[in-house]
Length: 182
Image (cartoon, rainbow, N blue to C red; front, side, top):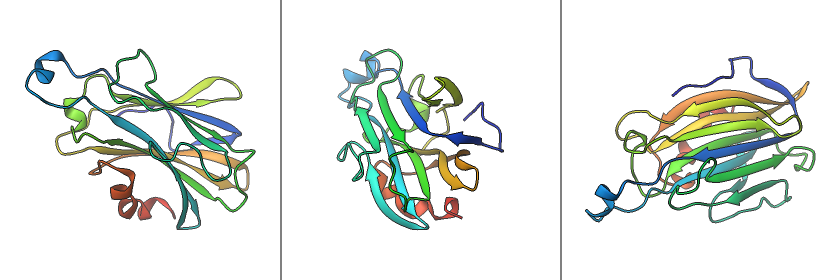
């Protein structure tokens, strides 16, 4: 995995867009009966260490309407971002203290098997990409935690995590996220 954001994070955010993209599975695999690649973008919202809301392919909008999954591709066939997840931090419930971003491979392919997979983060106010991850980690890794948004004394700040996990669905990832809530 690689990224362009440093360990200090990105402070003072108001609107963040996460783009997730990948290339579709090549025809040689499809002829063998393998399923299309279906990566999923998710945002998990926490109050302290308690999960209070989730946005992913089965729940496209958060309870407060501030977090939205705008596109849910099941093939990766479109150029650029195949899935787009937006967070309007000015509309977010005031009880939310952390949002953890997650990428999972719903069909179960490891990132090693997926061509040109990436996720990127854009400051929606300034339209500046501030982080990009190339998803190319090793076998048996079907999940990735790119980073989190944390409410600090200076406002909302993006902090990179960059950790590969084993999870095909956000529910499978939840027990693995506790270390990133402190």
